[in-house]
Image 1 (cartoon, rainbow, N blue to C red):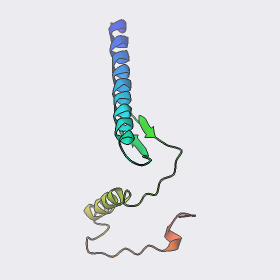
Image 2: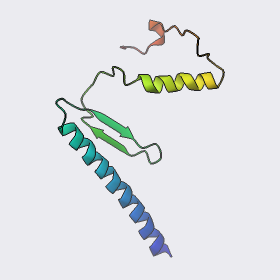
Image 3: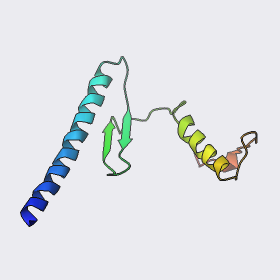
Image 4: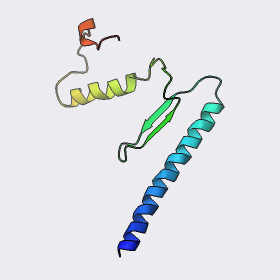
Length: 99
């Protein structure tokens, strides 16, 4: 029984690693077809596996942050903490240093 459990666990770990490698290869293939420098970071929410491409480079966020920000605001609307028509003022003091 222990052997089959160990083999099943090993298979799941290997399968996750293969999926991670497959995703990494797909990301790299897409990046190669672009005409610029591509940066990617993907964090698996369940297994915390991290896949990156050019992680040491710094890229401007531009509009990338808007989606998670919208999700956070809508969550607070659902919780009754904010209203959809409410203005939110952000001052320099609200920001982290060097932002």
